[in-house]
Structure formats: C-alpha cells, structure tokens
Length: 212
Image 1 (tube, rainbow, N blue to C red):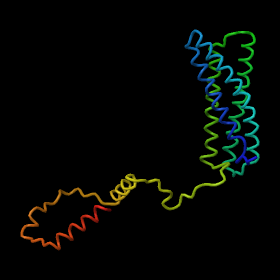
Image 2 (image 1 turned 30 degrees about the vertical axis):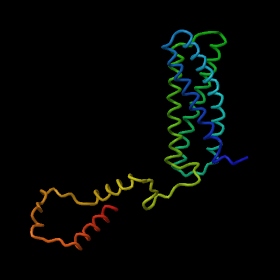
Image 3 (image 1 turned 30 degrees about the horizontal axis):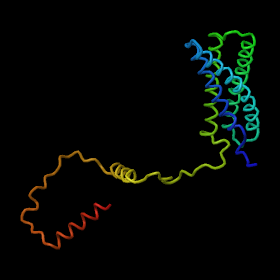
Image 4 (image 1 turned 90 degrees about the vertical axis):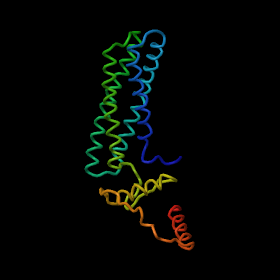
C-alpha cells in the first residue's frame, strides 16, 4: 500500500467540506422552494448532512493524528491549535444538527427556519476552519515535504509570444522615460549617397534586428 503523505487528514477533510457545504446550500434553497422538487432537495440535504457529519468524525481523528505527528515550530503550533479549536466546534455543531435532522425525520416533522439558521452558522464555522487549515499548509508549510526554491529568477513559464512580451516589458521597465518632444531627423539623409555595399549592410542589420 502506498504511503499517505503526510497523513489521512487532507483526504477526509475534502469530503467534510464538500458534503457539509452542499448540505447547507440545499437547506437554504429549499426554504424558497415548494412542491416535489423542494422535498427532493430537502431529502438530499438530509443525507448530505448525515454522511458529512459521519465522515467529519474521521476527519477529526485524522486531524488529531496530524496535530501530534506533523513537524512544526512555535508559530505554526499556535496556528495549528487555533485550527484544531475551530474544527472541534464544527464537529460538535454538525453532530448536533445531524441528530436534530434525524429526530425530525423519525417524527416526520418539517425542519424550520431555526434549523436552517443553525446550518448557516455551522457553515460559517466550517468556512473559518477550512481557511485556518489552508493557512497551515500554504503559509506555514506544515505537512509539506519539499518546498520550491525561489531564489534567483525562479521558474519561467513564458512560451511563444508571451516570452517576447515579457522581454519587452522588462526592457520598458528598465529604460528611462523621455518626456521631451521627438527630434526631427528629416533631411539628414540629404546629400548622402548610399552605395550598394552600404545598402546591403543596412538590410543585413535590419534583418538581424527583425530576427531578434
């Protein structure tokens, strides 16, 4: 079996975010819907909540394992603790909401606006938890085995015309700006005789400049 890097938490957390977020969205939409479609979406929202709450328990366990195993320093430990606290609130809130929805289904009761408001609150907790989790990876680099070296010019993604455009922009940024009026060079070639050799050389220079 291939090694899971760095642990199982990044896998489970995506199911948590997707299932619970979609459940919140559907519960809100069903408040404005009537008929069979509204009932169908309400049923889907219930099952998404139940599956999401169940897998969130696994996400929390995997997160606890990551909390105790991922290498970190003092600043990232504080950020990791904050993320853990937000995650605990998400687990508690959505577990209560899942039981609430199950009780309503057993008693054949309609979930009202209070329940939907609670789902929205849980969705905000979920969004904050996900944001703090992203901070751990993309700001503090936790669980990342290798970081790209950004010293020097870095990796160049320029291709085709984009490369030439970037080069022109770089040259434009390095060149000083001249605000003076353009100089008039008309008449400078008057009286000058251009021989065949010089004309050929001039054409050769133009061709070289054009090629570059």
